[in-house]
Length: 101
Length: 165
Length: 346
Image (cartoon, rainbow over all chains, first blue to last red):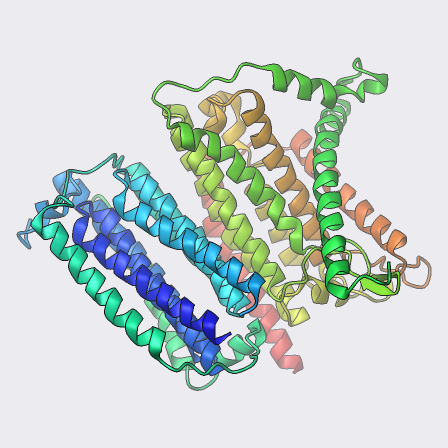
């Protein structure tokens, strides 16, 4: 079982770095957002793996909260994406580099 | 670990990594969205392997069932087809990004593969126990605060997406 | 038989159970297509299919052969992978939901106890909720993949309807879960054993039952919530461009969802395989338990057909209004009152 936990943690690191790579390389706002969600999920996996290792349920409760906050963030973030699209009719990240409309 | 658990874990982990790579290389956002759904479902199965059925079910209900549907709706409503090219993968910026992420992965993995991880023999992560933890005095305040957070997100999302306030 | 190890016995038993369950689901699906047309016809004072075979009983066979030989059409510009994958996604999600449902009492076979249930998961009800949430993707993907305006709008409307009513569906279960104190389907069913229906959740949680039934009807897109299929509306909604076997798969997914919802209602609210009259009607023998279970499911399926023959269709905005502004507050109120009563009684 310790091998399973170890491999799960390595998987979590791998998914996190793939997500980070996606945030750097992609130009579409929604795709960047999805890569951020991938990173959040990688962190969730790490929490659950450590919770299993330590035998304490703190990790699972924290995962519960991370999921809730991620869902709220996705809702508000996508509303912002809709508002931005309405303003500029493009979702390319480079078009929003001026910090003003 | 026993063979069956090992095989199942490697299949699921392989699917998750492959889908994640597909997600960051797909041109169309809908393809990326479905690749992310595959990642989420494999992760849910891995949570089940790690002995947490409650979080596994919750992952599908919240992430794959609600958040990704929201993403798909926004992509379809805004009719996002594909995107203009970003830093080309072979160019200097792309290679720097790749190098930095590989460095991060190498550092974390080297620590994890050599660390001593003591795992308790068995633990009870049934939904009753998780609920007990959740409503215990340590986390009760955070639980109530998240319900206010969700209310704020609800109002905020509607306010931001309206045509005129 | 007793020389097999426990693991081997479990493995063989599970494979047999899965094969029997999927086979019977598909069989009931084809039977339902015939029964629905016949019963609907009698309600509308006409006869329905009565030419193929005696009493028209071979009609599903004829339909199957017809659909099998139809031409497969794919519209130009459609995404081929998504177009083929969408009906598969619907059917897989529909079939997976049955895995945690018990359909009879446990009994002993060759010296070992056998559960009439494929998986006794700790989070049974939550698993079903998760699989129902996944069913939305088949609809969304089908609507988008066909590259046609009717399909896209139909798909978006259909999936919006599905996940709007999923909320009240889930909230109606919370009262049941609180009374049983567990997510396991077995615990919920066993909590309803007892004399003369008084422990049935139909009695203890009647508002939840009504909410569940309405939300379930909307979830599987049956009349009066079958706007996605209304011919006068968006041609045929998200399955406009589908023909032949892919259309058959979508129909299969819809009927199996209906059967799943009826089976779930039986287990959560109508006492599952318990008869409600344990002294008069014995229920611990698997055959008897299974018969009671089947009778209840059949009654619920008849009510679905009855609704289709009786009620007119909701308009889309009425449908969304009803789901969000009326069902969800009532479901929340039900949870509040149930929790209050349970806390009060200690």
